[in-house]
Image 1 (cartoon, rainbow, N blue to C red):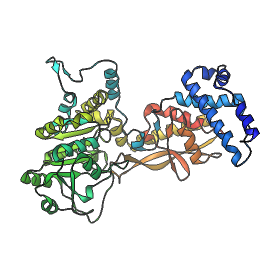
Image 2: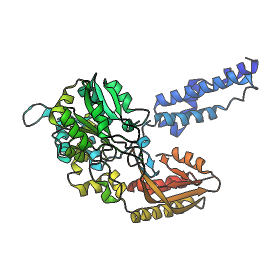
Image 3: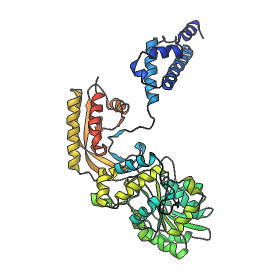
Image 4: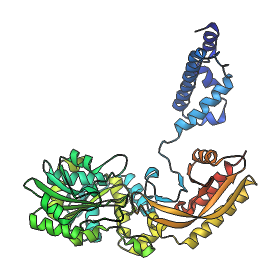
Length: 471
């Protein structure tokens, strides 16, 4: 280390000196001391590294002024003081966006969570009998009514539901499943891996594209314990294909004494074909077809909080309930509150479509999206003072969330272009606004899809887009 570097290191101000520098800043005065101190330490450590390592390639850079260091620390302190998990505006047009938290909750679900969180609750207490109860009772009757099942169980996600079913019914024994249904459900979680962790032994049958009933029949032996069917919710195989309907598997299961478990994935409780989308498998249909257990997600097409839902025969559900693993994957009180409120909306299908954001977005008429897009365009133009070119163009939305992978929904997009900013730069600026805005880039333009922007977010979105366009 040369003498100039040592001199610059000695000239770095102390934490207390930068605290004094920031004490006169009005913004810094509103921040908690821990955030300011942590930010100052981060800035000073960064500059120590820069000065200590910079001489290997060139002369050390000049040390910034004390005011510049304080300003840098203030920016970091603002970031540290901000919650890590934040609400953002989804203008991507992907309705169930896994990276963005999947389904936004209905207002009544949010209200119920707040109410339960503010005090004590009858989570595991029967008020009528005055004795200990089960947390499952708050949603079990709803799930049974909506699916026609004898019993139900809610856990913390659908992967946990599948794991619990396999561990309970097939630990150390074979689970017979079609090779074409050995899916990866996201983030590298694969059905064979879940099965292995659950203690089941994979017995795959058929081929990737064609599986017949005889394949299952020939595979069943003394060590077989379960017939598993998995809905390929995030991909489709088309062309020369064949699969075995759950009704045929149920007949085979009844003949051989093996339970049939079906993972239908996305959890559609209503027929989506009535709003022009392809039909997704519904738990109620699987129950009617004879499946012994059906598992599905709560935060996809159902439009509720993250949960894994298990419905089916009472005897089997009770076995799962008594498994010690059920406690490890049990659902918490806030999720239960939101789930109950969401399920109650399905008791009246019209209310479900009007109050559940996912269903409302999927069913939104193109005419309404056209109006929203026009309002958003006009507001951005009025606020941007000529810095942006804004137009409304044709486009498509996506269902997302591993559901209807081949489905594209016609929509209208608000296309935004800045003469002095590329689309990636504009995209980056929008991600750093408060709240952040998530968009898509199409043909070199930033595009906003009103389908996934909530009504009360439109004005905020227009202001944020206009604000980042300033040269």
